[in-house]
Length: 356
Ligand code: IPM
Ligand code: MG
Image (cartoon, rainbow, N blue to C red; front, side, top):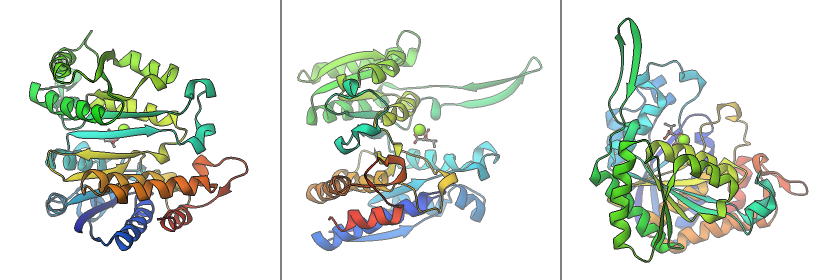
């Protein structure tokens, strides 16, 4: 197959982790007879520096025209004081919206080789953590009306959190379908004791639950979810939630595995066009030092092959290679353990590539 991938390396460690993921992807192409063509496009701080905006219209079009999009990370202290409409993060939100990437899948998996890296006690981690957060990505408070105004001589800021029935239903369907392919257990996270949007969310989810009688469905409040993720994380299989709750809970969940550097994600639309990125940020403090962990990005590429290109065997090959590299004792600094072999970002990429 021939696939066109638009690559948004971004800022900080973005370019170095992307380089390793492409290396692995090229090896997959070679081995399985595919051609991956890359179009590199600026996003975030580097785009602000060059063009004065976090993404240009032309570059946005290149994302829309691709078979799939691969993203590193955006942002850094250099652009923290930019006006809110040209912050690096703006570009990320714009790409999500313009490409219709409403379903964000964030798997949280504790690799058995890294069991010691989890800050939780062994008895809580049990036989390993393997849960999936399905986060709504193009609605809610991130995209609702925002304003800052002066009322009665005082500054008042407002962010509105709207959700329509159809927006809830389409993310709900993704969650139920995903649960059907996993352990058929779905928890829907909301704040229905306080929020109107959550009450509608719950109503729609209950309607869907009737269509999926095989799925063991439950409602859980977001504050309780935050607690249960630490107290008893193995109770969860699939969690579905709105945009901001998903942002917060997915960072919390990633820590169960010890390193956010290992976690991939997929942002899916109603077509096969998706965007794939590690869930960690641009880590400007370690940029250019060749110490970043590229595995989150490499595993994101595996998700791209699986979800956008329907290349199951190829995706398995990448996941197998990552596992083998860990089995063979190689670790980047963030997941380093005594007795293991510490390697840099580039070397880690080589090791995975050589195991494809
Ligand atoms: C994420 C990030 C983004 C978000 C930021 C960078 C806008 O935290 O992908 O989780 O809040 O969605
Ligand atoms: Mg986040």
